[in-house]
Image (tube, rainbow, N blue to C red):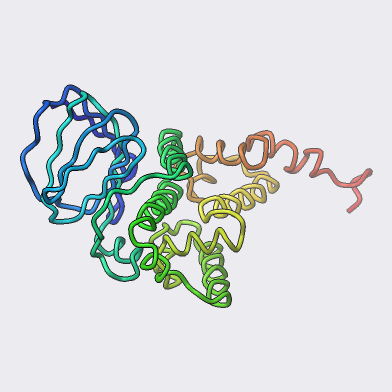
Length: 282
């Protein structure tokens, strides 16, 4: 069976891959226990899964939930298919499910917003989004799926009081201001909240996700440096936590409407925004 797996995000607690299965055999695969917790989000085609003896049809309107140790096998009666594989570590699963890593069985049928979020994750990964943004989107997607299986348990992990939510959001903003290089997991640990729930309350409080807010901070700092006349864009990208100069340019252009070079010409010393009053008077 020809299986092509392209890694989109590969961290200690979170793994996302684009999987294409071509020319599969028509019979059932060997019965094996699932080694990890995973979500299989079908994008095209149809195949069948058998989990602990229970048969399931897997198509683009559902999510198959792999539970660690579950005896499973698959069949592809209609030929090839394509899906996204999202794997979470046991601690991360526990954080999403109120402290208990035991995942209830079941097949999740996707709402349109889940299908859109799934494909936006793939699109952003292909567009070169950084790991922070992809992790935030992937955890939100996993939380949405698990909410269908165990809504009460997912809700139990969220901060309940407004004051506590505000405290956590303020703590996260302060941590980001102090160190823009923090990853999503590190940020969650620094404020004492799971990354998934922190992302939810952060969006509710600020109107945008943590990754976008962090980009706003980075762009503001980039603008200040460009106003001062900074010409070393590769160094600036490194210092602000961008993957490279091209990443810096894309984010600044998308956020501020102009590329860094043009902004430096407009804002820097000698530019229209940097000229002193006539006659050189201060």
